Amino acid sequence: MDRTYLSILFFWLSWLAVPAQVKVYDVTAYGAVGDGKTDDAAAIQRTIDVCNSNGGGQVYFPNGRTFLTGPLQLKSKIQLYLDFGATLLANPDESVYKLSAFGENRGEGMMWLWGKDINHLSIVGNGTINGNGVSFMGEELLDSYALKPVTSFDPRPHVLTIIGGQNIRISDLTIKEGAYWTVHLVGCDDVAIEGISLLNNLKIRNGDGIDIDHSRNVRISNCYITSGDDCICLKNRREFASHGPCHDIVVTNCTMTSRSCAIKIGSENMDSIYNVTVNNCIITKSNRGLGIQNRDEGTVTDVSFSNIIMDLHLWSDVWWGKAEPIYVTSFPRADSNNKDGNWRFPKGKTRGECGEISRIYFNNIFATSENGCYVGGDTYGKVNNVYFNNVKLRRMRSTSYDNNVFDLRPRQGEGFVKNNKLCIIGDRISNCKLDIETIR
Image (tube, rainbow, N blue to C red; front, side, top):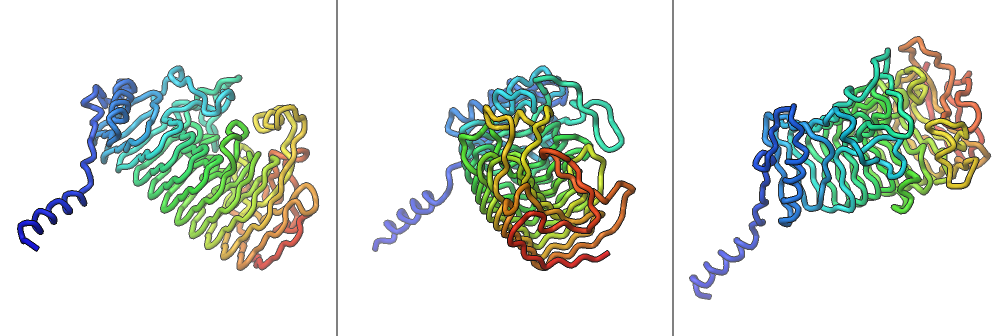
């Protein structure tokens, strides 16, 4: 073959192998100031819109600047890139938050950064997304912040809400100081959250870390999470029933601290949650370790927890949990008129039901805690096929709180039960296989 022809052929092949240059849209070129005082929402939204309309690219936040902003709508084929030292800061003015995080239910927070029915979104970089959480709180108490009085409208912004997203990537950056839930994935498919530091104030109530809601094919890895409420929570909220079950979830190589439960499934679960694995994690200074808290008619099946080290401590009743390392329960939701009571029932129902929990595996778990484990349900067999293999519990006092009680909230009837045993295992459950060593 002629050498000239070969040279031309190799040139075109090499050109085709080079990816097209990603176009960068600097938010300052579209009017963002980045002085930490001016609300840059209009300029940033303009940047996102132009990037999306031109077929996608990178929306760039330059280093060393703080971009104060109200709500932003994220769109498809966008890479939000926060350079080193760049901060996206939530506007503390409660009046700018208009869109509810839960549709017609406006009593559980608004949306700040959000997107709906989008695909190929990535949020990356070495910068910081700051939810400005304390600005939305009441007075500081001993182990929490008081909540400001609200009626049917709670203005606290959730940091990031993605509804109906596909191919979502969040990596490397710091997300901190959420005023309500931090990362909320609703009806999403194919999500990877990798190497982030999610650092919420441990005194902020409802400050969940990552909530996986009616979503599937989600991978969370190599993250460090501190959160007043649950660090990672799987659920199926009634408001989003059309998005189907929550399944095929992996959590691995994460370190977590929570005033509530580090890894929780429930309590909101009106569908099914299945095919979940949590592996190689460290849980420290938390109020509860691994929890399945079924309070609705949905089911939880085929869940594996393995290779986990826990260090648990008691906190006040502001927070759910009583330092239970392992907690597997299915009880009907309380019908009292409170935030977690009867209004969460199916439409037209005055009493709730709870679904089955089955095929749950705990392997190679070591916990130091002030309390023991609780596994139980409202009727015999509701919780079944729970397996414990090489689970070691060491009881050690570290606070002055009462450690002879388990927390079953928000269940119908008594919220707390007295505990005169280290563990209650086998309370109305069937086929529970134990290999637990308790060390006092």
